[in-house]
Length: 326
Image (tube, rainbow, N blue to C red; front, side, top):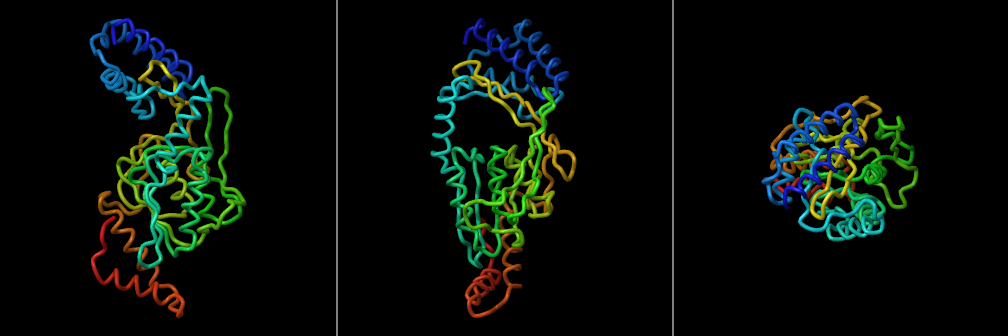
């Protein structure tokens, strides 16, 4: 990139931050600081989009620590938000390549479900069928492990879809998104019908987290924790609660600008800057072992009628040996 291209990107970035950032006063300050740095020549010699993204992102987050506020480098072509058909095709292709965000699904010994969701909780329009199918497959297990250690974002609509399978038919209020620019509040609830068997509201759930768990992965963790529906096992998450919007500034550079803030109906706040604190804090590498052991202990409390005997025997056998980490 030559200095003229870099200056054009910086002017466009400052404009979208000033206009759209979730906290207008902060957005104006960040934009002014960015323009001042650009005019001083701070970025002129960076040369490549990738290097520019690294330096500018650090400057954008200076003081506010908002990890969603970024100049993001894309090795391929950035989807254009002003071309809905192209953007739709981009996200559909990404969801297809990632199996709808379902990284792993398994029935573990003891009739315990394991559902790993990564890298993103894709919008239901792109991955709802895949997610529903995965959740249906674990619906009849006696306990569930949801692995979000490598889940780094996603759609609040997909969070609501997942949660719909983990409660009963009565609607449950999960989260609100507040848009400061117009004062609107969008509420997210589970739905009475999910079109498939539910795991339900009573069987235990353990959610595995890491220091990499971010954004949509954090919302799913936080919503379930606040509602007392799951036990969080692992590490404190990264702390990004401001949903963002993407703006194409260059063929390989996208501005990601937070435009809303989450407000949980129970806590009255969110996990921005603090992350989701685990209920059981262990290194991420140990989270599976700890959660699986607790799930096996739960299975052994269930009725030992003849139809269940093989399941409890599996649980005893695994607890009698070392639990193998996933």
